Length: 364
Image 1 (tube, rainbow, N blue to C red):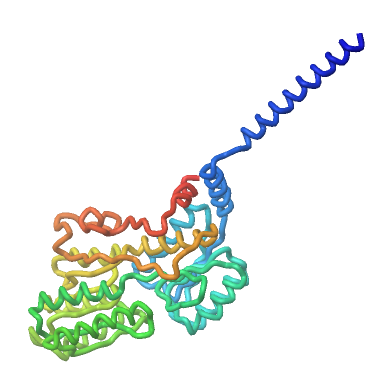
Image 2: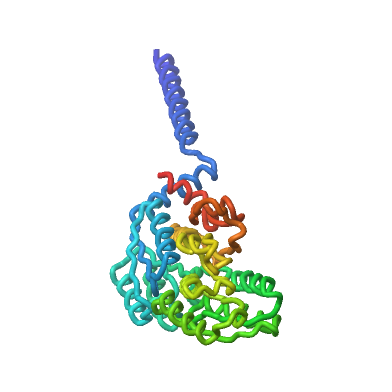
């Protein structure tokens, strides 16, 4: 009888042990995941944490349709990722821009985007932001602060493309007017290409040079009108090289109103308003080189969110420009920058900075 009880107890314990082992195996099996699945789950969780972020856009100026479309691109990309943008505009006042940057830091924004500005005005504030773990991504600013990703257009490429076409159309000789302004990172880079152009084409003479960032289109129009009176004869001026689309607009209006359509305008940057002038057969503006302004804003935001996500980002990102001429555009209908990719290869739809997790976060 005792033997039977012992055997029975042994059997019960054995069965119980098997059940525990099975349960353990089942739990172990359900908890085991592949490294790829684990990484994907982590990425999903981290992306979810980025919803509702407050982003500050600190701008030196917000002048013209190029800037407004750039802001549209910033807002579009941030909102797709569940965030909200607050825009601080300094109206070209660098002291005000630095103050706006400090305000954004003190208001504890989650991330900061910078548009233009100088290292002298912004470096102290940017370092303060980095110390407080607020990521910063700049556009067209000469900033070399560790941890900041800086975006720029291919400014020298844009200048070279328009200047080479000018030289070709002019037959390598003639008189030109340069509309340019110092003190801005992209302008300084474009100036380097212009100086090389002057050495390459000694028979193309600069007869006038001017430019201001304050009311640029209107001021350019006024100054251009004065220059046209100084050089009243056909052939006195061959072309205008405008280092900013606001300059190109002002110069084009002055030339068109004066009836001096023999003078051609070559610009840099492009917006919907610019395209209207470029397509106008009566307009002297015949070509421009640019990056889609909305793309600039989108790409800048993507790199900021990569930083918020904990990703490693490059110190410098160069956006590839395209050359756009009137000959590439339809004559029978007006197009905008959204439609421009149908006619100009390489325009818009940039995938720079567009990670898989960002695309997934947008869908959510």
